[in-house]
Figure 1 (cartoon, rainbow, N blue to C red):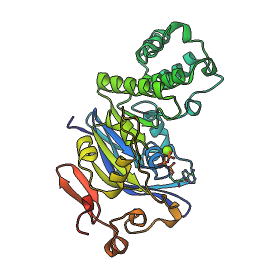
Figure 2 (cartoon, rainbow, N blue to C red; figure 1 turned 30 degrees about the vertical axis):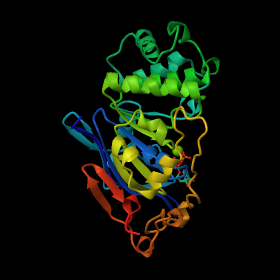
Figure 3 (tube, rainbow, N blue to C red; figure 1 turned 180 degrees about the horizontal axis):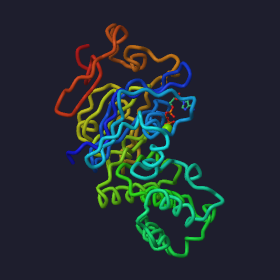
Figure 4 (cartoon, rainbow, N blue to C red; figure 1 turned 90 degrees about the vertical axis):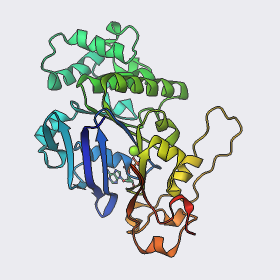
Amino acid sequence: MSEPLLQVEKLSVAFGRAEVVSGISFAIRRGEVLALVGESGCGKSSASLALAGLLPPAAEISAEHINFHTGQTVTDLYRLPEKQLRKIRGGKIAYVFQEPSVSLNPVMTVRSQISEVLELHRPEVSDYDREIIRLLEQVGIPDAAGRLKAYPHELSGGMQQRVMIAMALAGEPELLIADEPTTALDVTVQAQILELLHELQKQRNMAVLLISHNLGVVSALADRIAVMYAGRIVESGTVRQITGEALHPYTRALLAAVPELGREQQKLQTIPGFVPPPSEYSPNCRFAARCRFRTAECDAKLPPETEFESGHFCCCYHPGGENI
Ligand SMILES: Nc1ncnc2c1ncn2[C@@H]1O[C@H](COP(=O)(O)OP(=O)(O)OP(=O)(O)O)[C@@H](O)[C@H]1O
Ligand SMILES: [Mg+2]
């Protein structure tokens, strides 16, 4: 788990004058699961789509680098021409989205959709049907051979999600970017898909960038967690550090909002206030307006990123609510 796979340095994304991601940096090691969590609108999807050039042309992206390591080669995805990026996207880097309808083509059979991925990214495969059946079996689709000719609408939501994962796996990705992969599914199916992702990740030693607004969902799967608020990463660390020793008041508030499994009567705290629109993002601490530990310092300058324990970073003048 020591080799770096992806190193993102100072990534920003803007739509017009609204900067929705502001200079975030993070790294994912080979075989590691990094979760990116935060409330709706904080920029998780924009950041992840920017990595492999999937944002609409209106988006302005800047970065020091987005280095992707394959074998001995380091490729800066930020500077890579679209034509070459296309060879990596869907191949060594694959995406799984919340809505199967985004990835699955309604007028193409399961076989033809997965065949397209094989054609583009797996020249060594000669027997397509055999490989597709193998992939479908791997993602737990019963009667895989019988599903080759199925169209997406003939499958349940959970099955569509499995086909989407099979499509992502078809390119043998080293990095899987899963953006809210289970949010659209009912609770039982959610758990099954998360378990499937977990198994596949371990089997293949595949790195995963798992995006969710739910800290509870990611804790079971992730090695490390990066917490995003209003376009910035405000805290990052191992799952233990984030769920057990959270320092940032925002992380603590998110944790207080996670329902505990098995408890029936629970009083969940909601975080007072809301994420401001990007056009109103502060140059200083963006959480200050909602933070009960706010002092004049928070509104005067951006809190620097400080490493509190090995690998545990936080940007806050009052980590753990101290110094008030
Ligand atoms: N194509 C776009 N054009 C203009 N603004 C956009 C576009 N895509 C996203 N945004 C804005 O960027 C901000 C971040 O959105 P993004 O979808 O990245 O957040 P998110 O953290 O993924 O939220 P969610 O949890 O709801 O998926 C939002 O304010 C959103 O309105
Ligand atoms: Mg999103």
